[in-house]
Length: 113
Length: 113
Image 1: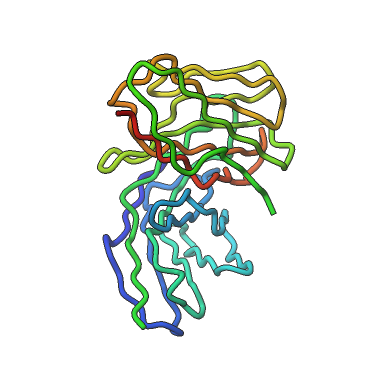
Image 2: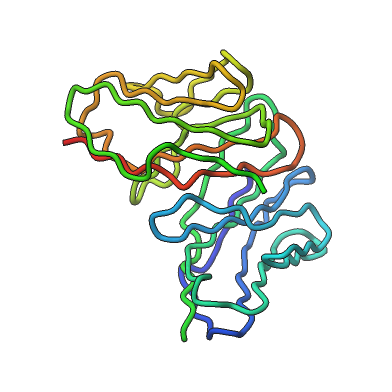
């Protein structure tokens, strides 16, 4: 799986858009970008994933650059409940032998009232 | 919505006890996983299963066993609990193929005294 680089921490004002960057310059053609978050003492929560097109769901938007070497997770109207550690993961779709997920250190996002 | 349910959020056991952690998913997923998460060590895969009665060792299977008698249920067993097995245990499930993500339960924080 490709290695990812994320800033260790970010702050965002409540009600504003939170933009979390992720660099994955060694991504290969079949690898997807996944985002999870983990609120303190809870299990990781899946947010969104994509291959090369931008994606949006009820939680967030995912913007992937044309060369696929970086991406940005956007939380459009951040609330205090969005305070969490956010993980960007790049991996092949599951197949026998590659199912393991590996989380890096992620970005600790703090939403400021 | 995908629901992965772990039987306990918090559990305290004594050294030498046999400990059972239960996980149930309601999305007919073929894959199920047990991870442990420790500060500074990230997420580590203990065992996974891609079918009923099938199991595969992950990175740290020593001291653990698993059971999958039904598709929706995956149990983690600590044969003789030790203090170094104090950790957050996370269950996850996913489809066997395709890009859909792994979904996690809320975790069981297990303390071995």
